[in-house]
Image (cartoon, rainbow, N blue to C red; front, side):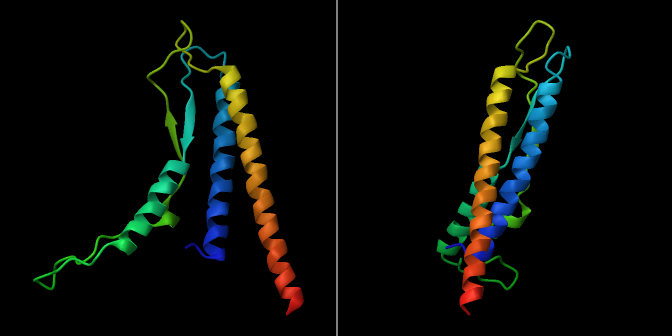
Length: 139
């Protein structure tokens, strides 16, 4: 179970990824008419999910029996704090004869989806601070 501060850290990381994704999508849109331009995208959520699952699975694992002091008794989980948004460039597809692979409709749809995602996360963070503020006022 993730604690309140851990949840806030995850929300912060998601906001950072959303800002990075906005910049990458804006760059794709700005270069829609540049011959040979290859679109990029941001990978974050899948990596975050892998790190969270790694944390959970290590907690469930039994420690290995060791016969020597130098043996590793437990595998190390992937640290959630180490997960960062990574930009990948799509070199494998082509939308037009000039080599550009930006689909403007798809990019605009991704921009709208990303903005909604950002607003949702920002609203959740605001709600968390309001909740904490209420606890402080009651004390």
